[in-house]
Length: 572
Image (cartoon, rainbow, N blue to C red; front, side):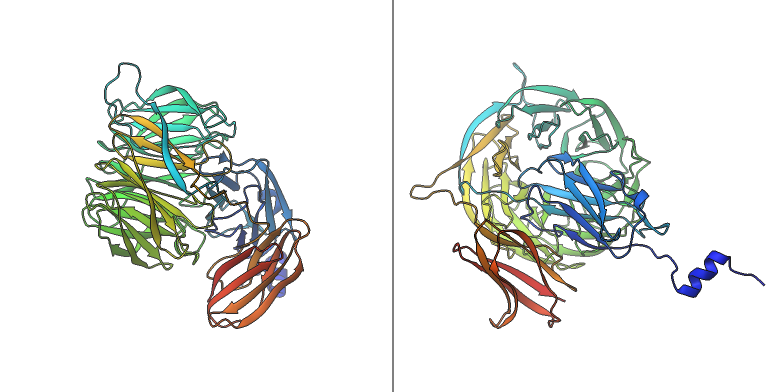
């Protein structure tokens, strides 16, 4: 007969067997578009954690453009809450990824899978009208066509400014333009890609945990993934090549697919209709890739995001030949399974992901290439549905998302090769878009980067022309008779998951001396709760714990300053 050890006997008798910890909430909430740039990031767990397992390696924060976030980590609330306080603000309007690895334990038991979620930082307002300004040459003196396509706007030298790394197809290189601190770019450096052939899609990551931004680039005319290791000073110390399991690498995404705390890379391979998953080792190298099968023809476009709210990043795949967007759900152990697919009116060339309708689920927009459209694809967790099909320019080959007008909703820019223009659409926060302006250049509308070029807290547009190989700097211009809108003196933002199955938290921010009333009403206008009514100086979090029936609710704010706000919440 077997006996339990004394320790196990006590645990069984007390019902205190250790269980795997789970992430209960993240603040700022996943998908939020208006997170404050200097806000603390708080990850709350359902049980006390082992303090020794909380470190910069197990809890990572990465801004898409600002790179690795440095700051302090604290355990709070009986070791159930991890607070990260950044040492400097994130860049305006960028995506921030928060990753918690399986190294985090409670009572020696690790998370069942890693946790990874994304939100966007707040962007300010200057104007919603644009004009094409100055341009600079990407070519060297006397050089012919190089076909510049794609750009990554990360802070490559760590000075807090948005630099530019531009892949060029014919010479197979990446050219780096460092920001002068005021939005200007001068001389560039050239970084050759051995074994590269028509490099194009690119994304930043920290592959070796040294705090410097590295760059991964797909090659559209062979089977290679190029990996450039950043030196933190605006250059790359080494370049490596990895064969994929397919050919014609047209899409690329960085995720922590298995929750081990190391960045992994996924590629789409158009000619072979498949995908490749490279598992990172954490030292800048990768294991041999494995093949993923999305089931579509011509796997071309790729974007990542947590579609079903389980804290694991999923993959959206655009299949150009079968004209569909495919959702592959991640399992947190390195596996991805096709969950749904939806037919698009255009042939997907590129995807961009974000919560377009405010329901807490990540959606995508698709560049419809030969069909001259942008398709909106909305996600309802593990299912997809077709949204609007937006008329665009001729041969739409790129789409990018960002809050260009600072209203808290994601806006859209399409890039159109044959018509040589860029179309700006304003998002309404409910999945709809309205064309705002068309910006023509003397060349090809190849792709655009939405980033805060000059550090003023407002998103700018940098456009790439692959016929003349130029960077165009699109400028904000004032509309006659209007003035830039000041930031609201009092404002609200959702600070919890949406849809909500538990408590709903709303962040209220106000200047000194202000007061506000915050209420919750149902769709019939009936008030069901008052969250705040009185002085509102500073920042506070309001919690709605009412046991309300499932449905749509409206959180309204009316302030003494005349400001107002509205947040839509879906209760499950």
